[in-house]
Image (cartoon, rainbow, N blue to C red; front, side):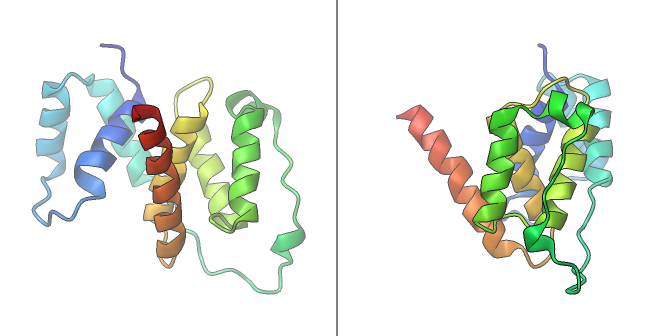
Length: 157
């Protein structure tokens, strides 16, 4: 089974993180289950490290004119995020699902993954995970959740 960190993160998010269940297992129990379903220990460890280093956006300094800011991607970011992915991030900013701070967290989390390129579906899940951890971003999270699951339903039907 050739799984990567993103697959582990998606499994955790879908089954444990974003659920109503209050009886969530501890890290050791999760690690055992992830190994039981076929994930490699190295990928599991990387996924937990990725989640533990999730950044939380701080309150914005209102003196900064962020609406007019233009994001310039460095060479490594350009390699990891293709034109579709960068365009999607811009779209999410324009519809105010992401602000400049959460966009930067998304980019930082993408760069923290041990992969060469992120496809658009993976990026959507990463955005969803980042928004889940951001206090005060519940409306943006709900909007993004609708976008992710509408795309999923379109593929299924």
